[in-house]
Image (cartoon, rainbow, N blue to C red; front, side, top):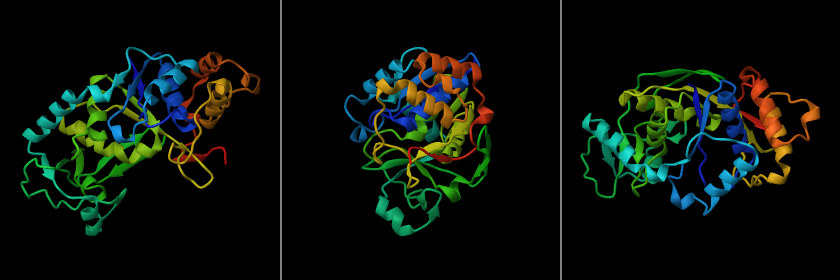
Length: 295
């Protein structure tokens, strides 16, 4: 059975950009009679907003989204992540790192997400005293085909460098947690925003090191404002008002290229979602990384 998921971070209320990811993942798997899970990626308490997780779930429910099984919270799954890190460590693939962001910046090595890590601590043999844990990478190309964005290729050592899997403050890093959870939950397809496209090779690399299956990936265009900034809490994206539920779902369907008929513009959310399931066509999604919305 096909199984997809929506995995928001509870750093604020649900907005249009996150609704697009929820809708795309929901319709893509429901159109295949598959299951849709919800997982809270609550790995970064300093950035999280109290009550945001519950608010996101209330909005999804009010908009007619139906998920399978219980909601999973990453903050309750640290034992699984530590098991994976122990496995990687036993294979000689991790090391402790005491470098600060300033140290990495001073090294000045360009990468796809700014300065990449220069490998300073790879052979330093630090003990676990106020240190993060990094994963050893190599330069063998990670090549995969995204179902919307096409073929992708990345050399981790040259493009990213050895990356953190356990933060210095003790919080788990996103890359290791998402890989462990997707496997544990039996996820067969990952439909999410294109802002995570560059993270995918790191996740495929981890899957290979841990002998885990790789799901299919489809990275949707993200909604951006008039200045090209991704809609987010930081850029002032307004929270979804459930009183405007039909309007925002209709707009999200149109954003994803599904061309809902005008007569459905005032339909109830459940009716719009049902239409979406019956008429979903991933080939109609614009093969772009971003699309302006509300500009």
